[in-house]
Length: 205
Image 1: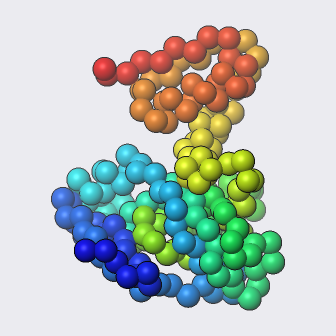
Image 2 (image 1 turned 180 degrees about the vertical axis):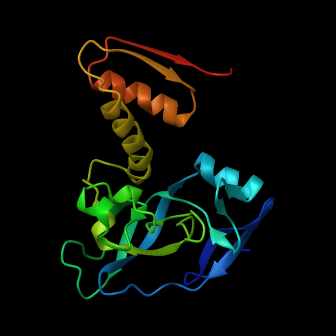
């Protein structure tokens, strides 16, 4: 059945093997948040893993959780403190938002903060839904020439940029990438962009 326009259908994992399409309330953005109408959400290996196994390491699905963290959408409402975004803006989402200014944040490594909010990492809900609220500071306006689909892929692209920077890839580098899934492929693209002279990739098939 088709959902009414006001409904917020969400893909929710309850436990290993138990995935449901549910209607969730449309959230109200706080002062520093925006409400987004979601457009494109990638399916990550982690989403599949939580659905099939109910956990990744120490992160265990104990309560129903909305999946999805590689995402883009359109701003439909802004909180009272938001100045850089307005309704109608197309944005990409950075899924990790620190909850406190700890030592990692002070060093600029906020992604390592143990208390970070991260979309679709238990117990935090993700954004594979129709409407989703997120910290406005972690929503990035997309240029007109970047599609929603490309916007959703900025998150996996950032993984590869980080990996290639850590590996010191530069002009003339010879690079080996182990694994030819989406993250492996995007690492090949970034390594080439950073000037690698030779890139070798291996995969199972």
